[in-house]
Amino acid sequence: MCEGEGQRLLVVKGAPEAVLAACTAVEGADGASLPMTEATRADLLARAAARGGEGLRLLGIAWRPMPECETIEGPDSEAGLVFAGFCAFLDPPKPSAATAIARLGALGVRVKIVSGDAAPVLLHVVASLGLAWPALQAAAAWSRGSRRWTSPPVFRRTRSDGSSSR
Image (cartoon, rainbow, N blue to C red; front, top):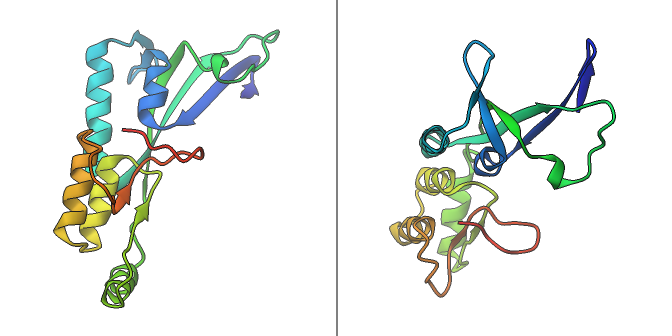
């Protein structure tokens, strides 16, 4: 929440798909709020996936006015939001990561990647590390929703409860 000049705003950040799901409007270039249509939501999700494919990690940012008498009552307060945009972060693997992974593989260590990233970001990271094609293929299959491998080398969007999202 932020306050200033007689206004209170609830500001929310998070995974683009989660933030967009809570939005009923989108902020236009002129600052005006426009209704969030399914076509607009789909376009924004496609843009997020495209940026993820370039290795950018994204956060969705949204807001809504918050009356003085209202208190934040958990996730249910995060509804009826106006989508403001994305924050993009470039955080590539360390230069030494590919060599370290290769050395571990040569020693017989099976490397697994556990990530909180969206599938397109993770696919970019796996490719940039030069991991074997089966690992990349498995990540791609997972991103398409197959979820049918016996020993996955890559997990994405892993949650604190141990589950993984699509």
